[in-house]
Amino acid sequence: MKILMFAHDGSLNRGCEAIVRSSTALIKEKISGAKVFLASGKPETDRMLGQLDGIFDGSPNSIKPYSMDWLISSFKVKLFQDETYALGKIHGKIIERIPQVDVCMSIGGDNYCYGEQPGWYEIDRRVKSQGKKLVLWGCSIGPEDLSERKLADLRLFDLILARETLTYELLRSKGLTNVRLVADPAFTMSKEELPLPEGWQEGNTVGLNFSPLVWKRNKDSQQAVGDLIRHILDTSNMTIALTPHVIEAGNDDSEVLSRYYEEFKHTGRVILLPNNLNAIQYKGYIARMRFFIGARTHATIAAYSNYVPTMVLGYSIKSKGIAKDLFGEEKLVLGIDEISSSSKLIGKFGEMVREEESIQARLREAVPQIQSMSYKAVEYLSELTNTH
Image (cartoon, rainbow, N blue to C red; front, side, top):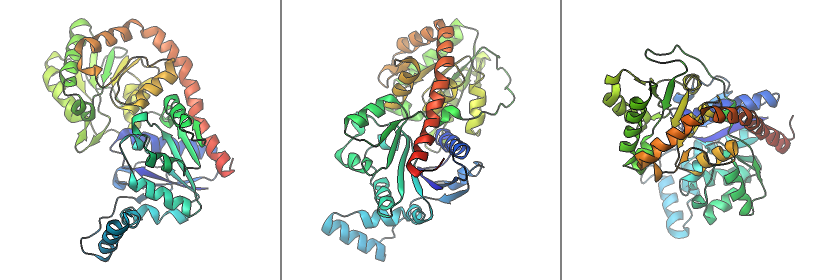
């Protein structure tokens, strides 16, 4: 069976890398002879993903003004409000690969959380028109994200694999019968343990990840997170390891974190991890932390999956859904509006420290069950394609 993963914009987002890396490993472990190919918006960032059978350039084409394609596109849009020709040309590098594979797998876990996606809708339509299987792999979608147009696209899929219960229940409530509940594949991802940096306290280091995405959406959160760092330094003897997880231009965690590093480095208890590590290397550091505080979902998954008590600076349904599936409640997840409150952040951190042992015990019990749900995704894929 040949599988083409698409809707991936490169591995500078280590969460996207974690999805590709862990999904490829799961598929190859469970489906003998499976070949997995990746269409990437930034293929040069994915070269270190050795298990793939091929990496293709899936970046969008531009339509040159006054070219034949431009004229045809303009004509169709103006006269018929029909974007399909233009979108087909823009996403031509992905569309031309469809005939060569059996399954097309849309893998961006939260691609459907950011408004309408007409480009993906057009690719999906082309996949089905060529009689290929179409799978939405490990997705999260919130009620505010669902439009009639998006629901029409979701109905095209042969299989939708929701990575947490909130998304699963929402999609089922909208009448979608092609949805199955699984877990994020990254819960099963391996880790690589690099040497610990100077100043790291084994068993007494708290990780902190923060993102420009959250920073921009709630400007007051900048000050509140700074107050939390000050509180940890003043009231404990822990070291704080500032941990980037997305390093794309314009969305680079290390830019935000380096400001905190400059502010607090004089204490000798704040470390800034490098911004050039891959997903399994970051997981190797996160696994050796005592606590973790994170805004990026896959940084928090790296912590959860190593039984590290974790506080989520959450901004979407995925953070809430993953915590609910682990703990039975949205434990230690703060919404986007709450993280501007220093007292709330400090209060939640105190709760995490007080309940350290019971949280660890719960994770040791829950994570193996979640990991078995990650494997369920491949079972459902096998059933769809009649391969075992």
